[in-house]
Length: 495
Ligand code: ADP
Ligand code: MG
Image (cartoon, rainbow, N blue to C red; front, side, top):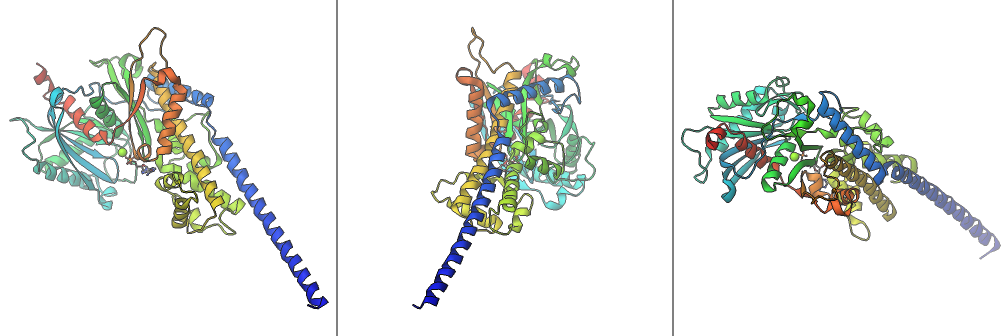
């Protein structure tokens, strides 16, 4: 090789080296900046036990305020009129109708009392045509009543209605309702994609009853509840130590059994049992102690209900994936986490659903293959192992914050009921919380964290008597049980 050629090679490789060094430096700078975003997220999401105690205390303060007066708190603390939870003695044939999402369910159950319990049950799920979710009230209720009538017509010999009696129905209606009695309530507003003309301000039981009459269906609604109350009733039937129900699904809510004398706004009308189920509507809880980030602020501002349901927006299945997307977007913009350009799909709100987040978070393969596949599927981008590890770390921070906050809420309820500690000379009362919802049921890291955090807050001794019981779709049978415990024939049977 001549001198010139050698010289040129040296110059070239020096240039290549310089470019490589620059690239490496840039990559390191980007990575450092992604790490900084991660660190900031971790700090802002931190929910150590002392902070969780402050949050639980704030929850109990709001519970008191909401019970004291209407509009007294962010927590509505709605009186459910359920003062008569299932005991196990219920007997007879009862129906339930569950409306609260894109599907509705109808169910019938033959109850056989203490000995025979649930003799037989059947249910059917029907999806609601999109056009009826945004149509008129009459059309929607006619459709529901027609499906119910069909279901009743298919009732087999194993189900038995005593001569001369009307069929009775528990109606689970999971929209905000101002309850006026156990079997009546007016719709405050439609949510969850429903926007039906002419029901707001109306009694939903009256609407359903009229539609049933139009279908020639002779059936009486004896209980109107929401999914949380239904879950509490179903849970109590299975286990007499159930004192509260929590939903951790698309949204979140809780209901619990309050002592009637602790409800000032109940205006002295003391229920026979001395107890009343309260629908907390806890998704709307808010406190300056809640660990919030810029991502949460932006999510809230851009949501359909800014300023509302703040607790729910930190915890529930509708939002966890969306928070993750927002963090990833910032990392893509500021730290080129996904290369030189930001993947356009990363900018689409709610593109990343919580079940996908959960699948990535649970990925146990050494090269995080599932994380890679999911990111490719959702955003159309290939990723390095380092990036995939970063994504899992972010999932962990967001999900554990949510789970820890949910545990603090449960602890708040236990504290309100004086079940958070064991008095020195007392035998611990067994305390059961009925749980339902797809987030808790399927996102194991989330549910493990709820349980371990609650244990940590309660301490060894007290936590030994507290149980969270998954009640898989207990709300359907719960509504049928409430139809039974509030049956029009109840008094007759007792006497
Ligand atoms: P809803 O709350 O609408 O009544 P579910 O209780 O069935 O319905 O909960 C559904 C929600 O649970 C979904 O919106 C989703 O956020 C969450 N979810 C469902 N499957 C999973 C999963 N595999 N991992 C994490 N979250 C899940
Ligand atoms: Mg549900």
